[in-house]
Length: 553
Ligand SMILES: Nc1ncnc2c1ncn2[C@@H]1O[C@H](COP(=O)(O)OP(=O)(O)OC[C@H]2O[C@@H]([n+]3cccc(C(=O)O)c3)[C@H](O)[C@@H]2O)[C@@H](O)[C@H]1O
Ligand SMILES: Nc1ncnc2c1ncn2[C@@H]1O[C@H](COP(=O)(O)OP(=O)(O)OP(=O)(O)O)[C@@H](O)[C@H]1O
Ligand SMILES: NC(=O)CC[C@H](N)C(=O)O
Image 1 (spheres, rainbow, N blue to C red):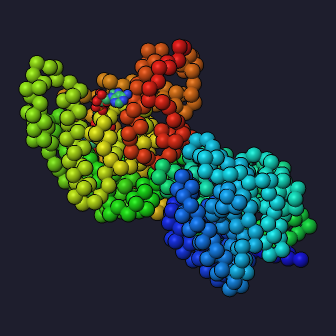
Image 2 (image 1 turned 135 degrees about the horizontal axis):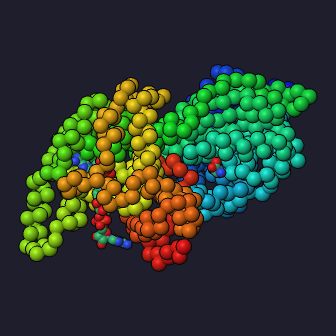
Image 3 (image 1 turned 30 degrees about the vertical axis):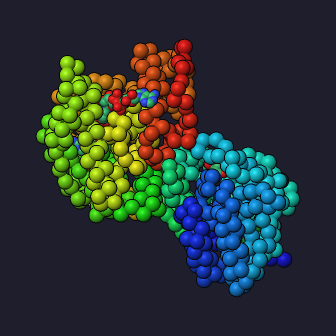
């Protein structure tokens, strides 16, 4: 009987669809595991295709390529080295499963299918996969290993089934996206499953960004006595070795590394950096460009971009107009200098005059207003897109969640852009993160230490500077109020009457509700951005554009 087992945990960053590249990563991690004499190396959920593959996984050619990669990896295990536990889509009797496969001695020795397919928030797995039947453990080098796949541990049934059928250790592969406070949520769920089953549990997550989702890694092992045996770092690829021994209390994992897991603002900052870095890298952009206005949103986006990509890959452009204050011009230049980025000034006086002249006879006798203001934003948008086209850098758009919520942005103007790092951050969070970054140097970031955003940018009142002496608060409630009301409406789906009962002014709440509903069309056309909250404006909240409903408080 086997009494010892060495399991390597490969917390890696796959690329969705890059089956060859992911296979190469798996081969490399297995090589590392072999050098450490591991018996088995484990990978995250659907690792060979990357998570989540979405409808790509419905393509027969894609399914064939994934299954061929599994066969290739299985053949490599004929070398007598570590067995492999890896996730891949799998077609069986014409049905497509989210599978986890045991490869050993040159063969596919076992497989198990995910039972509980998540279909809420950002997940759509019922759309593409067939649920598996109640699973039994896999025999890995003589040890009965239960493999509940990600969502399978979020309720009790699958683990109950695995422990009742003789499972000795639970190995859980995950594709578990980050959101604020998720770490505690995961740990509570894991502890519940350990309590019910009496089995030790390995929680292995992937790391990296995929479109709007970002995965934090942070894999861990908890023994049956609830002691944490291993904590891998968040936001980093790593292969950890765990040593297991059979005791009279069942299998026990020996204590290993205990990495510190970042919390609060630090984890949010690392999440947006990782999300932007992987979006740019995995889409093979040479860099990014953005309009740097001297305001806080574009300053924070520039800092995030420098931390994600390095100053040489970030191009900032100030596009002043007659309403742009000297203060903004000075602050933008200082911010660019602090960040060490390429910086240009392209005045928009001439393009705005060109549009104004072209429309002069058509607009004769009309009032000047939003239309003319939007021409400024749209002139900037055209110029920034031209720079993007010419140099290949992707344009970043900079609207925070408060603005995105109420439509305070110009379509085909400042909404131009391929990706928005701060899309899921309310304005008050933008302030907090800017202050935090000025005081901290986050890990694995490529920007400078010390202040990166001039203090004046943080302290002066926000303004779009589209007309003389304009302030955001002329058109919107103060951000403390706006953000709080939006959280009630967006994150909590609260009734209007309950929000008013918290002490907010009825007229303000109704106005925010109205603006939120009437700007759905803008969000539908907006760039994607990193999901940070439980409810982002991508997949988590799918509201209709035509919407006659108003809450009759
Ligand atoms: N349901 C719907 N489906 C499809 N299209 C719809 C629509 N409702 C309006 N539209 C169309 O949308 C257009 C109006 O939208 P748009 O042109 O964007 O203009 P609009 O939303 O009217 O104005 C832009 C607003 O954003 C503010 N802003 C602009 C720039 C920067 C900032 C900032 O501080 O960050 C703030 C600005 O002060 C103003 O309040 C019109 O063409 C209208 O026909
Ligand atoms: N003068 C400018 N030069 C360069 N870019 C600008 C300028 N004005 C606006 N932009 C771009 O348009 C975006 C929207 O800016 P605006 O100033 O209208 O409002 P904001 O949401 O308060 O943003 P910020 O805090 O960055 O100023 C900016 O973040 C910036 O990318
Ligand atoms: N891939 C999954 O099954 C993820 C679902 C799970 N509830 C999580 O967020 O961790």
